[in-house]
Image (cartoon, rainbow, N blue to C red):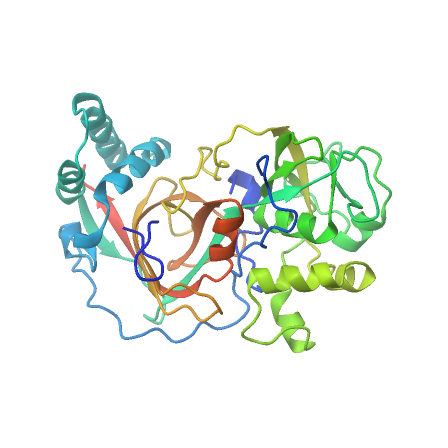
Length: 376
């Protein structure tokens, strides 16, 4: 089980190239004022972790992992059976084929079968930071926003399409200069703060005034580095140091909509362009190219992890207001983000919509990670 609080279960390809980790750092009934994206990233030190549980010995069964007996092995099996299709190494392919065979021949797959699959097919290797200390877990979600087909006084920020001739790596104008240029081909119109956070998330779902919905997906970026706005907001006294959750930041921007809020948002020069497509009612794709599974997918640093990797996370002691007590369980590496860096760093996909966003905004937990290494 992925636990949050006492116990609870556990974006989009290039769409999250820069914004999965912002700490300050879409559907027919979307609320007018959705909660903001998560407080993730690397701007402030996390609260020191509590004493670590004894790490599982390497090269032994996953059954040695802390909390293994409490896991929902069947839910984890279903998530990995979908995510493992992106794996490229021979051992992962072997176990992926084994999972597919179990699904095809066992109707239904039982929790005990799922647990036996993991325990017989994988061994455990702990991921470690350079100093042996904890890493960081943050969270993101697929936001849902109200939008307009034409601009008005409130919905005055255009959703801009990919610039003509853009190629990855191009460096263009900074956010403030792009926003100052008059749009000629806006795909939709949003509140300024909503568009800012949708760009951080990399994708989102839009509900228009006629009730129709659409998905806005990453299409391009301006090649500028991402800069979190939480720390400067705290330093300027706009928010308290321990009150820079996504919800708090979005509320401040909405309350100061106009030149004051835009000046703060301009501190992040990164800008994302979108494509707008029909809403299929599902979850966005991760960088691996397949849909994310709520509470079972993470974004990782591709320098240390591969798409399709099966990972055990254990995170306790979040320090943001409203934080749940812990998150623990099996997840699949299916995404990445420019602020997700290091061997013990993960951005947890919470799901879609306002409830997921509210929880994601308070995730900033010291983290331990273990790689489940497939047997060849």
